[in-house]
Amino acid sequence: MATQTAAQAQKQDVALREPTVSERFTGMVIKELSSTTGSGVTLSEDQKRLAQHLFVKIDATLNALEVKRAQQDRNGTPIVWANVNMQKLALDAMHRIELGLDALIPNHIHPIPYLNKKTGKYDLDLRIGYSGKDYYRRGIALEKPTDIIYELVYSTDKFVAHKKSLNNDIESFEFEIVNPFDRGKIVGGFGYICYEDKTKNKLIIVTEKDFEKSQKAAKSNEFWGKHEVEMRFKTLVHRVTDKLTIDPRKVTASFATVEQQEYEAEVEAEIAREANQDIIDVKAEPAGDAAEESPPMSDAEKAEALEREKAEAAGEQGELFNNKGSRRPNF
Figure 1 (cartoon, rainbow, N blue to C red):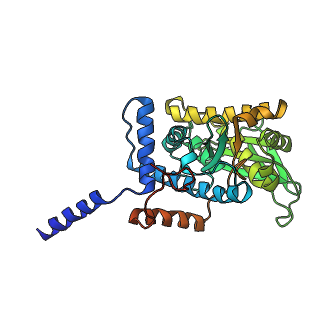
Figure 2 (tube, rainbow, N blue to C red; figure 1 turned 180 degrees about the horizontal axis):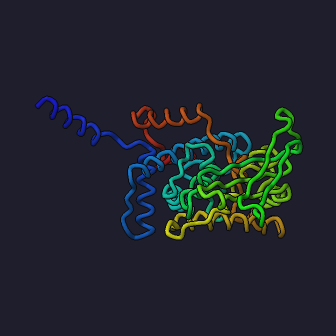
Figure 3 (cartoon, rainbow, N blue to C red; figure 1 turned 180 degrees about the vertical axis):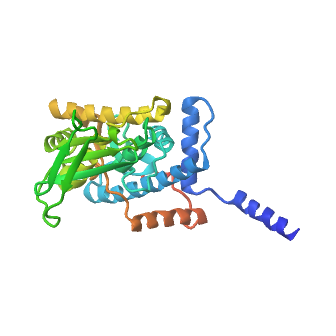
């Protein structure tokens, strides 16, 4: 009897506990999706966890960018939850959640706010990083590879490609890092997709001209200039995973949407480069230093963000503010 009473008390405590901000964010996503689709939306426990992780990542990103914005442009639009296009965020968030992407895993998702001058609000671009692209592309492949090797090639490295031919049934390569402490400049990269049937193995070569093309298509050259190795590696992963054959039975609306968004971003950048630069600026502009991809959260940043979430759950941070300048979400 005492055990039953304790269990009942525990259930009652859970029922009375106020939901954390990340849980309210998850509820907001469900509510927005239900109103858009006209039908009820149910998330699994794993999807709820991914939604809460996405909130933590976005919240930390907005806080960091708002600090920088306040220092650089006091008259600008605050980068806070009250100024975020929540309907768009809810839809885009659900697509990433359905693909199984975890925002707290480095390079899965990079939230990048763009100020939409027409609405006066920030559209959050939930940019999928190279680790996220590798993850969901492997998951929907017609034949899942046993491994994918990604390597950037430097000027002092030795690389020999063995493509499939009449006398060679298996594509392969030779790769040697001659001087690991001073490899010189990046001259290209390659990806090697491995299968159980080795005759299906694929070698994909990406040249420096390919990297330069991606750099020119970027909305801003700042990130490429500061992080040339990371951006080249990202380009390499994208080029290689594009070669995976997609299983039509695994194609979902979420997959189609994120692929279309990625394609549209590339086309938009191409137009901006070839035509009048003001075309893109009229529509949206990146916030702070997030013109390309924000760097992944460090372990310390993750711990700090999660501690904030625990504090919210315990009610230590008080009421959430409704005013436009508040950094805290109002949902």
